[in-house]
Amino acid sequence: MTSTPPSLPAAGSADPAADPAAVNSFQVDLRGLVDLLSHHLYSSPRVYVRELLQNAVDAITARHAHEPGAQVRIRLTASAGNVTIEDSGIGLTADEAHSLLATIGRSSKRAGADAAEAVQGLETTRQEFLGQFGIGLLACFVVARQIRVVTRSARRPDAAPVEWLATDDGSYTVRELPHEARPEPGTTVHLQARPGAEEWTAPAKVEQLARDYGSLLPYDITFDDGEGGEPRPITDRPAVWDRPFPTPAARRVALAGHCAGLFGFTPLDSIDLDLPVAGVRGVAYVLPEPTSPAHRSGHRVHLKGMLLTEQADNLLPDWAFFVRAVLDTDTLRPTASRENLYDDETLAAVREALGARIRAWLTELAASEPERLAAFLSVHHLGVKSLARHDAELLGLMLPWLPFETSDGSMSLEEFAAAHTDIHFTRTVEEFRQIAPIAAAHGLGVINAGYTYDADLLALLPSVRPELKVTELDAGAVTERLDPVPTGVELALASFLSTARTRLEPQSCDVVLRAFQPVSVPALYLDDRQARQERDRTAALDNADSLWSGILGALRGSGPRARLVLNHNNPLIRRIAGLPDPTLAGTAIESLYGQALLMSQRPLRPTDTTLLNRAFLGLLEWATHSAPTQEDPK
Image (tube, rainbow, N blue to C red; front, side, top):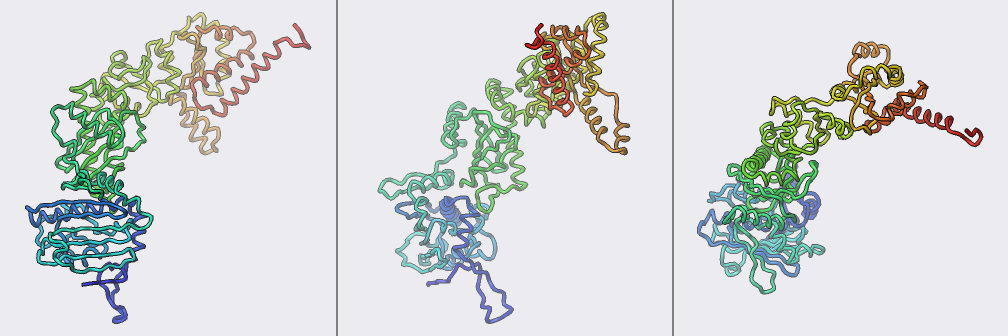
């Protein structure tokens, strides 16, 4: 029985000349379809090895369902541009070869009338097979110019063996062979490499790909390089996370070695990912170095033992960026290319459950192995902070461990709360850097919340520790902690302070006199959110039309203003306060304002830039007029 159609049909054919109203069938250009697969569906030609293994494993699964006691095997061979895989699976008859091997989109694993003959008498459900999309051997044309299949059916032992021979021009033949051509049921697939694809069919490459894809497959698979040696095992079962070990320490060592071989790093720790209800088993390896929250690790996912992808980035919650996972699943759906996971409700539920397992691991460490938890948090506290900002219970558990930058040094929130029941925080690192030394000298507890997630955690803190008061740092809170100068001194400097306030009024900045440490700081610029909002309203009012001027004017209040706090302990402030020339004193005040503003590293407004230029030029003018010159020696 031989058939040589010009192309592989998508379904039955019809003759349009016989009936103008007849429904015609699509014809498939195989070369175009192979090009589509290789350039758009599959990321690499390497997937052909996966397809070969997948078909062989599915054939074995079907044979077991039909004949539970059958002896089964899969053997892969590669040499000199040829690849062969042999299995003792269910096999095919001549009719099935026509129907299933040469019809695009049809699969012996697909339920339905179109595959009824192929699955007749089987109790195996579709979910037990690896293949689901019916592309079959077509993917092998990505590397092969010719595919030869020799097969014999286990369901029809009286049927003759069949040869199915196809080439990449879209033609194929089917013929029956003598019984001795294949005495036992099963299938052998021979691939002949196409020009330019030799690297993908080299023995070393085929063996490597087979190990990558098939190490966890449920049946024994061997590889033969054709050089006369013993076939080498491809499968390595059970998975390392399912093997028994004499002690937990021995298991950790084994997992660390597995991670080093798989991902190229020795993990800081490992986390079991065991979800029996979801059909998921595996392990997450903790990265040994800090990583960015924006980083998305590529996780390794096996589907029923077959490697699906090494780059799954939607498997774990976003906050779990500090681990790389490897697992095997029976339930998650693959995409059409079988190179990633379909992001559906099942995956969302599994992702949430895997996140809960990582969270439980953290809880267990906190309760029983604080040393391991401390080592983990010293590297990956950002990941735990990301999780804890949505989980008050976990935040309470992690209070003794999570590090924060504070005015008392780097410490946990629990240590800081023991010294300060009133906790203040700054929203920017720059603001904290300016205020931290002064706050520490005057007993004011300030936390730097300018780092990722810290502001969110501080907002959540009162729900965990109700006795704590957490507020954003404002100018008034700082000023109240600084030592006032004697009343007599402030009265003596009333004229100077009046001049200073007048000069900084256009900047919406008040001036106060205090005595504080360190002495080396002449002036401190203090600001808060309300003061910034008031300045923004003022700027909008100045640029608004008459209608908006009325509205904004009604909203304008006499709320907090930015403050320039002059340090009476600083010798420079004392000298400036004693200047007899009000104009020069005003210029010096503007210079102090500019210096304090620059030290706070806040963005400069146009009015601030104008003031800085004016003060700088004014000081140069004063310096050049007061210094002796050659024309006017003193």
